[in-house]
Length: 71
Image (cartoon, rainbow, N blue to C red):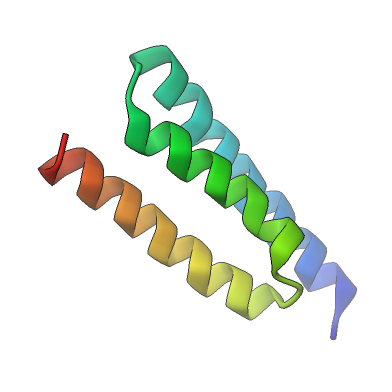
């Protein structure tokens, strides 16, 4: 396991999650807020950069889908 790629993936997905969380809080939108918190949390739960990225892409797609079609 390469620690530098895992650290870089954590930085990227945590930053994207922070952006979604801030957007969700300011817009009072539940999907981006919860999704952003989940994106920030995957770096603590998943140790592989590839798995973290796959889960991150699925979460972002879910946030966009819920925000577009459910809200």
